[in-house]
Image (tube, rainbow, N blue to C red; front, top):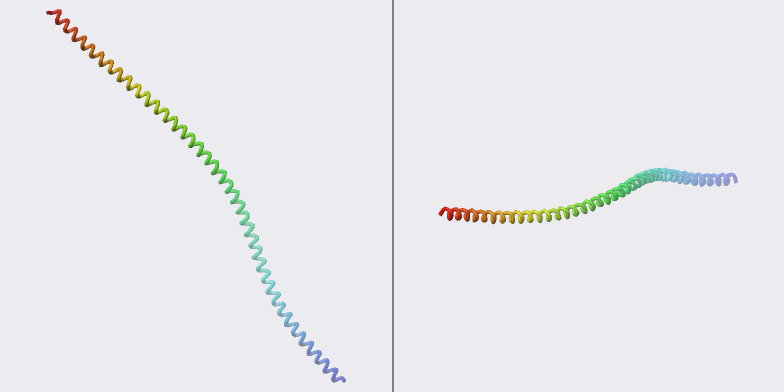
Length: 145
C-alpha cells in the first residue's frame, strides 16, 4: 500500500511538475508578450503624444493664419476702396481737364477769329489809307495843274 501510495504520489508529483512547468512556460510567454505589449504601448503612447503636440502646433498655426487672412482680406478691401476712390477722382479730373481743354480751344478759336477780324479791319483801313493817299496825290496833282 505504501508503494502504491508512493507511486500515486510520484505520479501526482510528476503531473504537478508537468503542470507547473507548463504554467511557467505560459508565464514566461505571457511576460514576454506583456513586455512586448508594454513596449508597443509606450511607443504608441509616445506617437500619440507627438501627434497631439503636432496637432496643437498646427491648430495654433491655423488660427494665426486665419487671423492673418482676415487682416489681409480687410487690407485688400481697404486698398480696393482706395483704388475705387482714386479711379473716381481720376475720372472726375479727366472730365475737368476735357472741359477746360474744350474751353481753351473755344477761347483760342475766338481769339483767332478776333485777330483775323482785326487784321481784316486793319487791311481795309490800310487800303483806305492808300486810297486816300492816292486821292490826296491826285488832288494835289490837280491843284498843281
